[in-house]
Length: 155
Image (cartoon, rainbow, N blue to C red; front, side):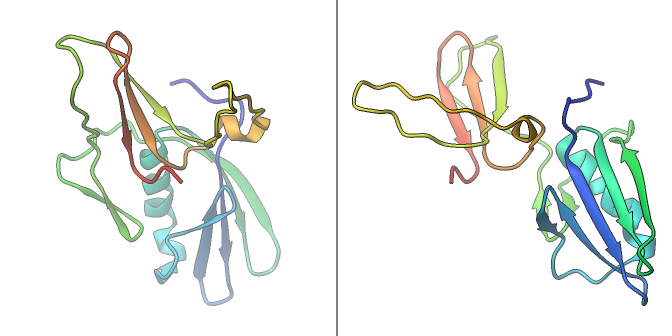
């Protein structure tokens, strides 16, 4: 398993009643779900399976005690039916069409969009933290045909 230089961060806060709030890279995760301390293993499995990468986990108890760990994706194969991740059903299969038979297809996460200038060029600098980020759309790109298929919200 390749481990990215910058890991995604899951922050979990557990209150006095044992309810937890979760965020992933600063964005609320599984918002609206009444998650309890006992849901933590399932939540971390959902996150690591969705991202398919290790995740830095920071758990803060109601008294302020903080624990740090690294959660890794399970070695168990994904089930063939759609998996429930938070409120969103996720299909573990990504599909695209228009590629050449036998062609290698690259899959990329879209981190940011930039508009080309009048000459058709663009440049952008990514912060180091963006390298490990796993949010946004996916791009399937045919390495021979140069055909691209955008999957998900491009914004």
